[in-house]
Amino acid sequence: SDGAVEKIVSVIDFGQYSNKVRMPMKLAKEQLVCLRDHYPERLEKAFLVDAPFVFRAFWNIVYPFIDKDTKEKIVFVKGDEEKEKVMGKYMSKDQCMSFFHPKGEMKNDLNMKEYLYDVPFDFTFEDYC
Image (cartoon, rainbow, N blue to C red; front, side):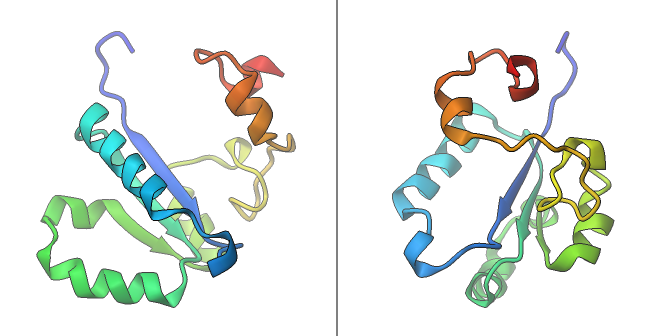
């Protein structure tokens, strides 16, 4: 990065969420601890896409107790229009697949097993393909 400030944009898509396929709480906690300990102040935005009602309800309960800067980083996005309008400021459609951005142009299906185990750490998926 040659000393440039780098920021992270996190997107969590709850489109297929159900109690049967939810992320274990331990894993969610480990991810938050990793961000906190290894990437302090790097989070630009965290988009929670099509989050179930219970997430928004919980957010409304804890919202008054959260730091102002953190509040501005958490964004709930619902539906294709909001995805395009809100997330389009941070990601271009050529970087996104259609499930992620309504007009997404990226056509490669991401094989997570291949990406996590076969792609060298310093390569992006596109560099590897």
